[in-house]
Image (cartoon, rainbow, N blue to C red):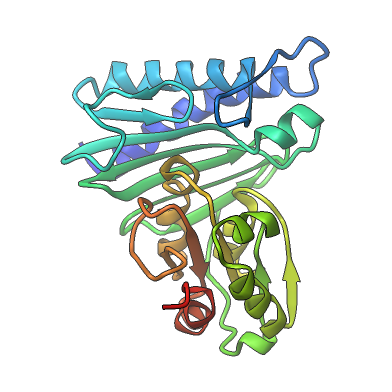
Length: 267
């Protein structure tokens, strides 16, 4: 198996999942429940994760799987030695259940805890992004003749940058109100687009910095290879590498250290 084989498997799995999620999007009989953490989950979330897990298990039966709705096949939900698939069946469930088209299915393969293959598919937006280490980052819109290779922006000054901070309350809950205000006020423009999309816009070069707090590994894993292969950098808000620290900061690399100086917790 190569990473290209794994990428093909992930894209095939997400293609099937998209049929399920699109069929349930804006459905009048959508079933919505509340999880113990008070976040919503729909019947589409569980159905999408189930079909992806079945596809992955059939093709890679020895790999560990971590998903938002069905948990982990390993002894713990943390980073695993060897191969571990990480799934967010519908990133942006709140948008999905309200009929807002900004949601996506995220699939990543991590090796020894580091994401190396990923697919982000937003069927209601008609766009998909994918990457694998050493193979570049790509995107394709419905109707495109060929995929387009992704490159981050070349903005070098935060005062000229567009930054995205997602949920302002999330920063406050993580004791980073001072930090998010500093980041927003230092930029040319500050935005609050949620979920996966601002990170894909960083990879496309449309946004220069994106960050947020209160995240899980399945929220972030599929973002990392796409950001990296587009020439960007991904870390926690405190500068830790990887997706196991609960926060995210993605940039065009040129602005990363400047942004980190503002987002790190004091002391």
